Length: 420
Ligand SMILES: [Zn+2]
Image (cartoon, rainbow, N blue to C red; front, top):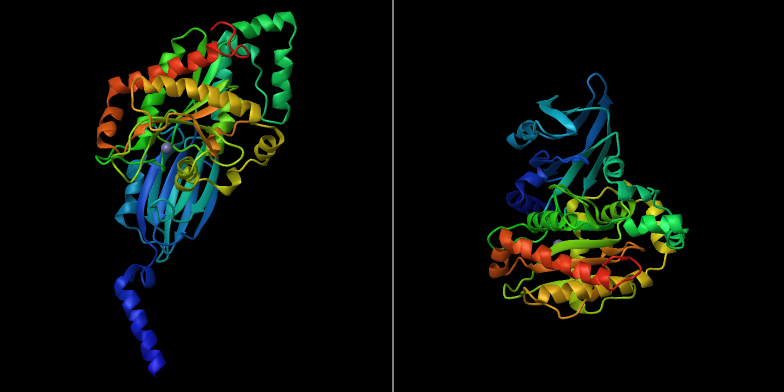
């Protein structure tokens, strides 16, 4: 008797504190859409995991998702208003109550599409999420590469190959190519992959007045691309050019598919102490971090996949193998060299948070054959630096100095640059 009363009291207490969780149906608390050419993501955030069924129907092409134990509230209803007429992958979304237990979401597709639906556990301030990714049938990246090849003759000497362990071999073959090819490679542009950190669901760090790291990184990356492209010998490619999430290994894969010679990831740092300030530059380490703070930062940046939302199916076993097969030590030496030139240059326009390039296990820097650095441009958590990060002119200056650092590295590196 005593025991059952005791349990009853506990149950009532829990019910008073978390009424929704105990008795109510699952509830959609937010519905978001991230449209991009590469793919459009629809995210439904809820207090409990969403159980669901899906089917794909033709004429017109559409995806039907039945959400179980979900009431049709305003958050869910409003999903249909969030599809832009410019969305490249989704024409429209309709939401309706199917029966007492089920709400139905119908996603009308622009064309036959590849669909990936997966659930995410709570991470980075988000609750449970059901993610629906709609990809165009044509691989956007390959289309971009082919487009680039048509327009840009110097690039056409670079054959596009799938990411395999042979890629390294091919690079070596290029180095000892016969004279006619050597002339081609002298003329070819040096390709620099610019990686705007975070994006989409993953906002990155947030400044005191609400600035989101993902917006700052994209803005600086675009400016840097423009400056790079105005140099005849250089060409920049962006790993993302919009507000959507690209998984960390996806950024590495893109840079390699686009045959980048260098990789520069742009970020803005954050710390609990608002006084923390200055720029820093990082490279990959194969054997532990060079300091506790570098390890902390790498862990924080690597959380991007958890927060941004990566489906387990996304892990490309071929890529994992390639990364293990190839030694990175030579590339890491070059990365540190590149990092030092960029860091020196940033020291001219900003305080330096760290006076040397630090190393840790950053997932986004794991291209085995592309010198790669991660630039923390400044602290978004420092109100003064947040203000300058938002300033267009300052962003141009940051981009300019990163580019000067890159050029100095190229000039010092006869393997890549014949004309610097
Ligand atoms: Zn970041």
